Length: 350
Image (cartoon, rainbow, N blue to C red):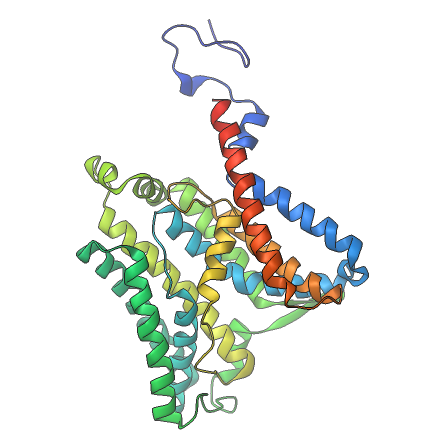
């Protein structure tokens, strides 16, 4: 005898073999609350800002969302794994500074600086993961220390080498045009100007989602976030998993840093401070729990899209941009409450 939806399972039946209703599966998705919030934000600014629904505005919103979403995706995976990275914002700037200064000082092809930057940025991510797993200190403390060190190094080395707080222009160097096509190009589709960061964002979210849902490493991430000791007891390589997550954040920081550099060909050493909170908030709005073990990469993309709509929607509505922080805080609270309600409903229907 087989069980049908809405009927109790026969004694001894395996619950994994029971059919799950579409509603129950929907309620179990971490990004459900953020999707509801995204629809609400879209409708709100569609009403209060006439220019919000223009095709050109859509391209601008997507670009703003992509610059956040590229980092929010690996940050979401890290949070699912139960950790934070407060150095993510300044790491983006560090990546750009390394590419620029190495290329300029060595008078080399800019691609040399790009690959040196990749190696150094990955080393910073590995350092965060190594220190976390070796010292057993909270990731808040480890990455706060890295944040402060990178902030000082960014400013100190830039002033020491360039004599100012910004790098020298590399726009006339060999390889700049080809690197710009990869990291900062744009194209027009149906009258809408789209930046290449949108493509990078989509690829990173797709890869992160595939890792979470289709790979053993994804199972490890959820297990580690649910409880490192319990995960270790069943054979999960906790140290390797956490270091891998920090390497993922570092890679995304490298991509964002190269976009920053090749968009303007110079970099200000003080940029990036505070962006780490934006990435974390986008992940939380997207359904990630602060305590770890729950969330999705798709949710982080929705959270980043909400950021893009809000930031540009306020401009299109011709409001004072100072209100952005208020809306950001309100969205964070509402999204967290909605996500908690959805999660409780999902647990109640199991």
